[in-house]
Length: 197
Image (cartoon, rainbow, N blue to C red; front, side):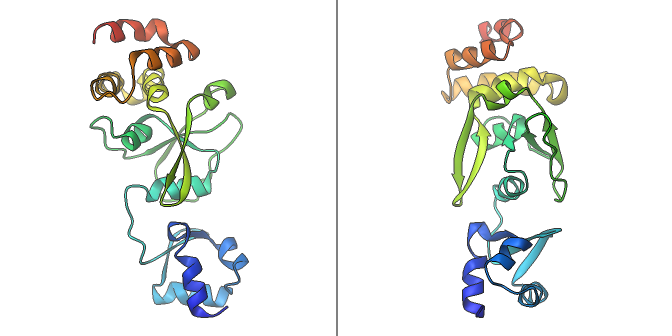
């Protein structure tokens, strides 16, 4: 494959590609390593590269983790951050995976995983396009309920902030949150907090 066509391919998909996809596109291993040595691509982690001129943004980790774990749904603090709620800085990426599915550990990010039941895992999944890449994130209403469900892991203060701010900013409603709380069997725990705001 000629160099210009190879670079055109490397710019696609936010510039993030697995080695197998690079080879499948017709770029030889020799050319791939030459690009790496020249700084045209950077190795993100074992078996994954990114075109060097792509500017990393707040979504780069979401895209890389989605490519490594296609069933991953961003949840808890990662979902709050995606939806622009709260003051928490996600030092770890929180993802939800179905029970029995293990995460792919080949990346440099600190990943925290929850494994809900199949029914709870499937509730509230939203598909978002980020830089032409599809990623899965829980809806804000489901995320607020999950924050209460996992308050021992992330802190009750985070759950309360998520509840108050999401309603104050009108990004969701009490009714939508209550619907997920009932489905997730969290209504008894959440009711006093919901009544107090």
